[in-house]
Amino acid sequence: MGHSQESGPIYCGNPSLGLPSLNGLMLVLSARTGLTEAVLLDNSYLTAAAGAVAARWFARHDAKRVAIIGADEQARLQLKALRRVRDIEHVTVWAREQERALHYARDYEADGLPCEVADSVSHAIERADIARRHRAASR
Image (cartoon, rainbow, N blue to C red; front, top):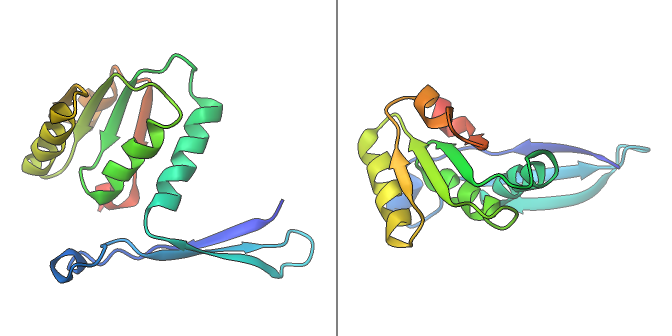
């Protein structure tokens, strides 16, 4: 097993240019030699996939309710990846900007996934089996 190092800057103005706001790289280094074994492009999904891998191995197998802290692009990718490893039946979302959380919830409700907006982080996680937060949600 190797070591990894990630650089994932957020450029909030990029969507207005037709570009993703999250761009990054991950270096995978040999645990034995420290030499670079891989350079991975991370357009946000790599981070979400890592969260899903953690949920697959560490969350209860019957986990059905998820709390998502944040309502941006990364929050959508987190839920998309999580749904590949767990049968999610309900989402509670919280975001600093309530309008963004409402938009997030409406989108998932339209796809048939019950999604409610929480008025606080503690409310979002109080009945969740899995909670996902990402760096941008805490800025």
